[in-house]
Length: 129
Image: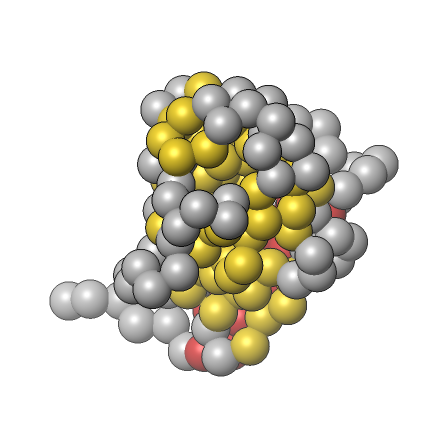
């Protein structure tokens, strides 16, 4: 039998995720990865997001003014201010991509990022279960 949580329970779990990311002395971060290489790091707001209807939506302007490395972004993770991974295995795509957790833009409609390039997260959501 499959376990089914109420939206209230899912929302509470996702609020706990926000608390874990925001815990500590400063803001958490979102790292965009090419394999295991961090291509871009984006500082998160505090609070890092909101929860509604079983979905955590990261909020604020999510921007890296200068990517650290060159690579094809294929996943992402979220860390708290101490550098502890709170969420991993997030999927990444570009506008018009469906079924991904994070939509990015580098001005070229590609997930290929070049070091020094501006990287913007246009949308980032996690659906709870």
